[in-house]
Image (cartoon, rainbow, N blue to C red; front, side, top):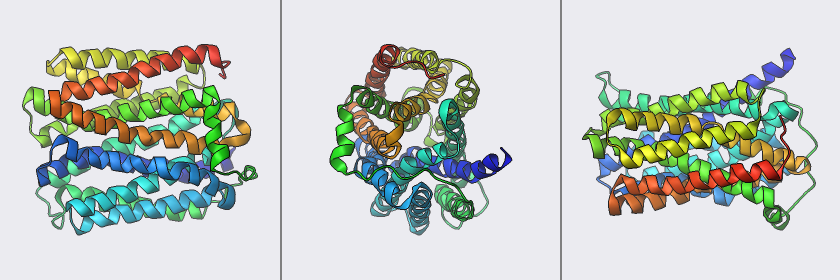
Length: 389
């Protein structure tokens, strides 16, 4: 048992590194201000990050069959470290596009391989709660990012001219530590899945439950990235805040998402994942209604917090149910589920156009569509599979 926990430590640091992708929300707002971009232009950055999940997720699932999950995670960390190095040399539009592209590629590799690597250490009914704890660790990196960026942008201590971009080298050092620690940790993996090609992977989407899970992941990450980028804009539009003042809204979201992941770790190990998912989605629906009808500061803050808490466990529940539904195809299922993170491309693009047209209420409307689907998914979950907990 002690050996298992020792092996989990570097894996959890990798989950922390997985959270680096969420810096794109606050970073895109700073780049927008620095380069005087429109909402649609600025939202290209988070969209670009998650575009690579569409391209690389399924190939990564097959790559794991060849080189193993641990080596795939190590490769993802190397790409991530390189992506975090680039902004040290400037924040031009081209430089940030390259950085965010590599960040997205590295994160696609990591998210596809790290979750199945966790299943090599923890299995069965404990998998959902263990993945949720990993999401809790990931969320710590997510909510720290805006604070580090604000500190770099506003404090008086020299940051070598990086200002808010000091965030990147700080996270790069942590990625390097994760590479060294995981590389030195022995992890016994399951035998690779039977060799498979693109056709057999994508044919799994023809299985109704796998398709439901895939679309659920798309909506989850669309709401996640959407709130990450839109929360500061809501405060700026409705309360007249500056970007530095409004940036804490992103941290508010991730603080409550972190709290949700931590509480979900214990709740999911004891109670029905279906019931907990229903409660989580109901919180998000209430929050979306609140963001539509109110410009009262307290109500907006409460709604952002509700979205953070409600969305915190959706990924773990959906992902775990997909893995449990196809236990002999974990690598392929993981690739398909992580491809669903392409929702982080679709939602911000639609939200950018909607907010340019009618303000941030348009962005909220797009996210509400994702919440509506998760309500549908929760209802279907009750009749599609047996409760696993």
